[in-house]
Length: 270
Image 1: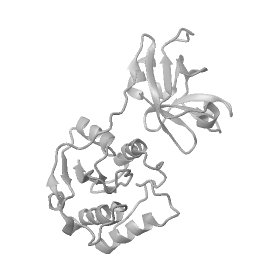
Image 2 (image 1 turned 120 degrees about the vertical axis):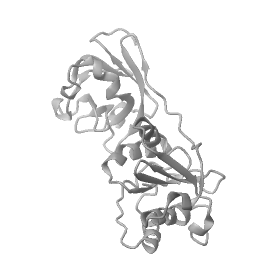
Image 3 (image 1 turned 30 degrees about the horizontal axis):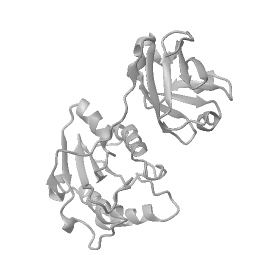
C-alpha cells in the first residue's frame, strides 16, 4: 500500500526488489491511490483490509512524508501478520484493533543496514529498506533478526465522536473514490437506536451543515438517484453518500467537517 500512484514506476521497482529476494512471493496491490502524504487515509485503508488477508501476510506500507528524516523505520508482527513501513502512525488503527482483540504484538526498529539494499536513497526507503525487509519476512526470517525491539510506536491522535443529549456528534474522516464521506461515528455508537441496525435506522436525523437526512438507510438503493443518503458502510462507519453521484462534490465537504446524528425526528439544535 502506497501513495505512489501508478504512473512513475515506483511500485514496480519495489516489486522487483521483493522478487529478487523472495522469488515467487505472491504480491497483492491493496492501494496505490492513497492521497499523497495522507497518513490517516493510509491507516484507515490498512485497518479495513487486514482481516481479509491470510496469516503470515506482510503489509509493506509507504505513505511517508517524513522519508529521509530522523523518523524510524519499523516492522511489526500483529497476531499472525506483519507490517513494514515508517513509524508515523500508519499502524495506529490496526494496532488498536489488535490490542482490543488481545493479539500478540511485537515491534522492531529496522536498524540493521545489512538487511537493506547496499545504496540507500533519502527519498525512496520503500525500495531500499521496506521492500528488502518485507521480502526477508516473506522468506521466513524472524522479526527479531531485522532490528531492535521497540514498544513506543508513533500513533495518530484520531478524534473520537462525542455523545450529545440526542445522539452523537462526529466528523468526516475519509472520502473514498466515489465521493462517499466516512465519519468517525461507528456502528457500535448507533446500535441502541434500532432493533436491527442492518435494516437501517429510520427514526433519526443525520445532519451535515444545512443538510438533513431522514434516517439511516440499509442500502444505497433505498433512495432515489441524486438523493443524499446515510448508510453504515462496509467498514462499519456512518457514511454520507449521494446515490449515483458524488457526495463530496455535492456538499463541498472536507475531512474534519462535523456530522451529527439525532435520536429523534426533531429539528432542535445538537
